[in-house]
Image (cartoon, rainbow, N blue to C red):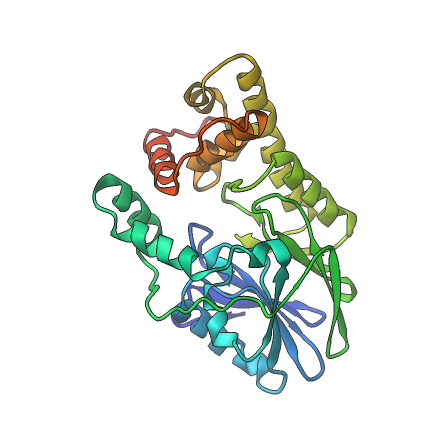
Length: 318
């Protein structure tokens, strides 16, 4: 295990040609990545949120990739902390799902920059979560190859399967499966030790995506955020999602308002995870799927409500 000098993470060898780049923390913007090494080339699963983080990660990987350069990048979805660093791998083939690629645009980055400049409380909430990152100099570098369903790649003798799932966390999620290593890179289908956030949904689609991972019968699962895990981590994520969906659905049919639902749902053991305020977005997602006519909150409003929730949140005794 080698610690990055600036990258906020470490390179973890998983065995059987697979590595994980694991961020030092699982909070907003600090994401994991993966490396699959073949005889003469390598595949990188995701880049990071800014160029400094991505460059530091690549520097730590250099001892592994020097004679087996990265020729392929797979982006698991279209959140910036998994693709903003693509331009440092612009010589490689960059692959994503069709739906993910549709959301990778310069406007995605420009919107974040505008939120960071917003005055007052709204901007403060965004700066608290994302102000540590450096978005200067980034040019959005989209995929050069997209697919739907499944795509099988040969990484210098190592079979790699890219499988689209969901909609779940986003509407373009995919997982990367290495059968010979019994390993899967799950992207943001998994937040281990941190609360998942449902941007697309429905939650039932995310639960089904977790079933897809479990059906692969793998030993090692690399999450998008948090430490490397196994089937237990997948099952815990499912349990949280099922709990929120069931409780929020019951509140909706009881005629409770969105705010009443958020305030009434107990988190139990899940309250020990970081970012418990993501419950706000997750309940909103359930309500919006049950009634598509409900208005959607802006990103700034979501961040404000999450911060408000966490300011008064006290984990339950379990």
